[in-house]
Length: 106
Image (tube, rainbow, N blue to C red; front, side, top):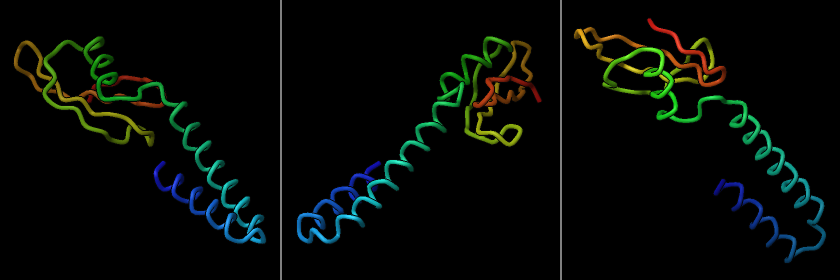
């Protein structure tokens, strides 16, 4: 976001200095807005957007104490891997697919 803002501000300063550069500034501004919209769409498609949500889903389906949570790829999608300790002392992993919200145990 900071880079996009810098590009827009830099482009506007060029526009103020040289009115002939208006079409180049418009092109850059257009590219930045398209890039930001694509980024927002990608984030909006995720059903699980944080480690905390992944832990809630994992604990809801599988009881246990959470030992660790890390980002990972699940079935080619972004997701989380949650390490749990069961009440009988067994350590196991649960994958949470961020795109679908699907929870599965390894």
